[in-house]
Length: 268
Length: 283
Image (cartoon, rainbow over all chains, first blue to last red; front, top):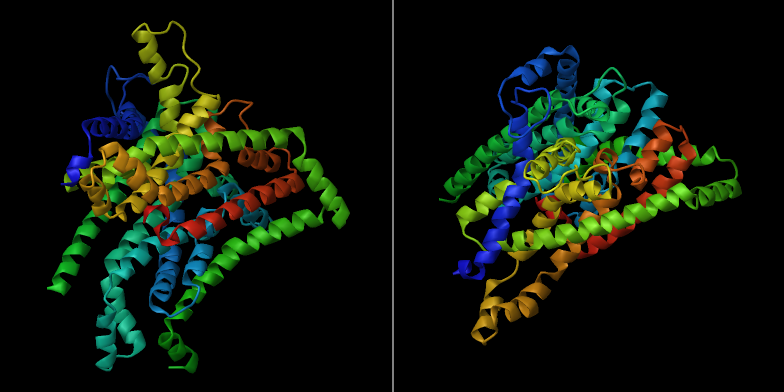
């Protein structure tokens, strides 16, 4: 019945738009497997040599390591703190909930350049430029709002009666939290952690200021090479980042399916 | 168990404390400290105001503000016109098509901005794929300048921000009760009439939130204009970065940041009034 509202002209437009949305990403992936030394589409020959360059070069490998470490730190901080805050926002009788949330979402609204410069100002004074642990901490500021948004949606679906039942059966608040709330929210927490990791792994502007020469992340390395020349090895690095995004979306899809089947089971 | 710990479990509201403390240390303190320190360096309050006025009225800043507003406005309108039909399609199609189209939006949405910008540089460059195609098919003889100008910036930013617009519009359209449109049809309204006088007004607040979020993100944009723009397409965020990185002019950077921050916060306050913030970014 709803299909009647979608005209053929609209369907055609949407089909073209979808091609337009995916094409740039797909083309970069294809080009990263090109055999020639310049970017020509479609490539006349295919090879893995740009990936060999990417994984063989110590500086690219170093940036991959920095990115991974920073993203893991940011992911742990943002997920733990964000989970507690999301639980507080969903469960407590706090007034002005919406207002508090809108303040906590500020890091994704304030232009990153301003945040990055302010962080750099402080970081330089403390002599922490290039410190992986500190950059992870700063990235967690950007990742926290994403964790909050995902977990608020996930926790909304958790039945409050399960907690009430456990409480009335004599479980302490902390026991209810760790034995009931955490296990039920676990799939949502995993999703949030994945996207927190991705947010940090893909972040450029803060890293650009805080990384110095020591902790250059993968996006910073790509940024630097784009200012010199568009070399095909960047296509391999970009494809690697796209693959990480794809992996995160794939795992998240699996988690979501698991979650909906769990919800159906508890409702049955 | 100590008294404070049992209080923590009795009232879950206290679990928000770590997050507030973390954001205070990691976000608020750096911002406040940066503004206070750099503004103090300018001397007395009068000197500060004079310096701020001379920075804001300088040619470079005025030009950057004009460029920023133009590009942000253009990108907002382009994402709206390109995104509205897609969001409408998402809200009114069966499960299979919904999943397919959503996939095409989500993949670029979660791909790194630097990667999305790079992929458009590959397409639009002087020897890029679009020029290779245009010359190869004989449509043009000389490469067309698509990159390192305003056109490149607008294309790149529209691509990057389109998913935000679509997901915001979709969230609003999902809430529209289809029986209203059906009732209009039943009362004899044509499809176009029902759309214009029933559906469009019902989706208006979604249009407003979508435009606000895209405009807010666009005026603070840095990566895409920095890589795809030409020498004359300097946006305010790029000017802020340059004054710190190249000219080491912290006071100017602080004044411009304060201006950009004020505009962003005012727009965010309007956004807060018209939207459920929990739906931000299409969560």
